[in-house]
Amino acid sequence: MAGPGSRRFLILHGWQNRRPPSHWQWQLAEALRAEAEPVLYPQLPDPDRPSPTAWRELVRAELGQLGAGERIVIAHSLAVLVWLDLAPALTAAERVDRVLLVSPPSREVLRSHVEVAAFADIPIDPAGVGAAAATTRLVGSDDDPYCPGGADVEYAALRLDTDVLSGAGHLDTEAGYGVWPAVLAWCHDPRTRLTPRAEHGMT
Image (cartoon, rainbow, N blue to C red; front, side, top):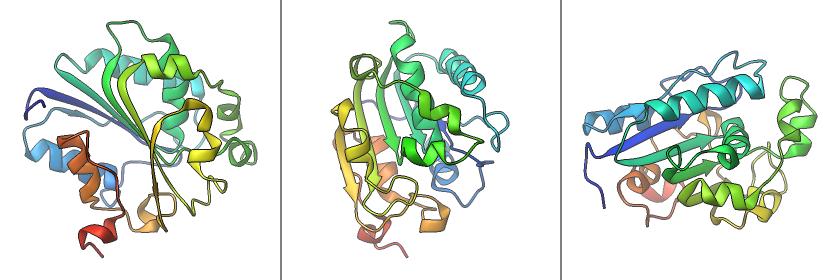
């Protein structure tokens, strides 16, 4: 496994997210930087009324800045759809080593919100998503209000290695996901299974 400094992380947030310090993605970025890991954690444009095209273009530009070494992408919520949109178009040079897709919303929920309804039309290309990274993990909750049927069912066509967490909501600040030890452990070791905060003694 790669050691500190040889990995490169790109962290991508979701809808209405302005990277609050209370969010697990902010906490993860700070923890990785404290370990001398290079981290890109961009503010995606117009988070309240996002454009699929604008988000895709920015994410692709960030991939170009990610550099060499082990390249790792961590996407939450709406950013998962952006990755699914972008992944099949990546060149061999743009592809990454690992991807963690956390709490993607269902297409039904996306269509019910005019601000993000366009993301519901992003096609699912299992082969393209699989080719974009050496390994991709999907993580969802069994009670996510933004994906009532469960991400493992909604995105079953992708045939991804999946962790289903019990009682973790949308895996956001409202569900208590600030510091999330399991996701930091996965950053260190891709064999780590993603587990709820409570299983690590967090409250």
